[in-house]
Length: 462
Image (cartoon, rainbow, N blue to C red; front, side, top):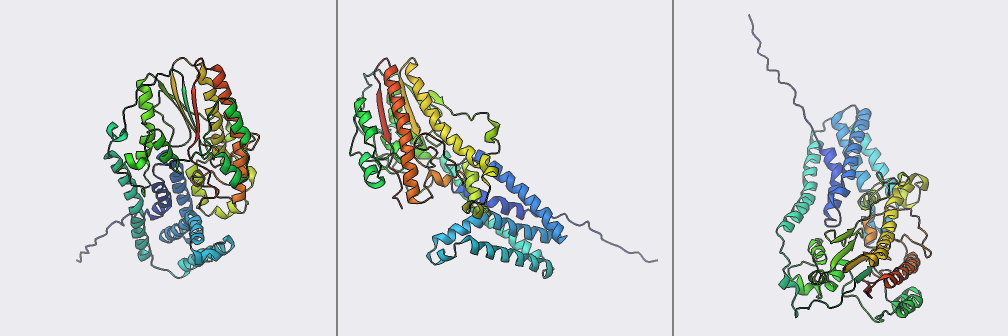
């Protein structure tokens, strides 16, 4: 009698998630590099889309290879190409010796050859995939370290931040409570330039607007300069009566973390002084981090319930930037995506930007009829890019996604910037004059109105 002892272990279920990690990593890295500008609410759809894209990619690759390990490998490479093509293209444009190669017709051909070559090699030559999968597993761990560290450090630093105490803000003599009892308007037009510079550099004659302000009783500072060339720095200084480097002594100017500056703008000294004098603080939804939501009265822009604007599916600025960095980039650059098929997705965030500007002016018109004393802070992101109005107020159509980069710079030609900027200034001027005249006419007590550009335009900035 022979007894056979057989040790039959059940095969272990190996769940390898590296294709999914590769799919979400570019999103997390982009999020980590824009902390303070982007919240999780703006990236969740990108993360979900990436997971769905990865699942579909795995299914298609399994149909091609009939092997899950090869499907995972090919899918991982495909996702890397799809999500990072725009980064590679921009990287070539930044390196002098590679600029001649920064052409879609070259990069697309190279990408296609590599993609097909890898697929054939994987299908025909590779029999054992364990080492390749192990490489991708360690690769995923490596690429996750940086964004997770940046996000973790960002939130830990904020929890242990140095509080801005009153004695750090005030280094001059105490300011007495104002005897003035009228409303005080502080209207900041983002990137609005000085009259002589607009004439000299942009060939734009703004004298009619300046003359009308003068006739309304305004003093126009003809040689004014901004204290800083950036919104948060400029407003932080003006609203607290001090330069930033004299107050936030621990602030690291090389850091991308702007929360200290945002807090500095939100809890500013002017607001404190006027609150002590019985003023209520009024703020508006600017679509930017200067929206001070804890104001006594906060006017939040609410998106109209218009199904034609595809509000649920429309891209936010982060999603627009993700699209620009993906394999879709050539279609955008060459205008190959039909405007009709992308109109809702492309235009909805621009429409919201335009309507938010009009919303601010509409609410400014209503304040003079309100009972009480108010300090009104209105940061209006115009005539800053993205440009959304023509000279007569007509809405401009766009062929590229609304993206974060355009809140920092205009990516078109310099002449296009100058023309679009001048047209938007013309229309914003008309809104300002209309609003100011209404405020002056309907205010029981003559108000104080300060109209200021936080910094100048950027057509000639590097």
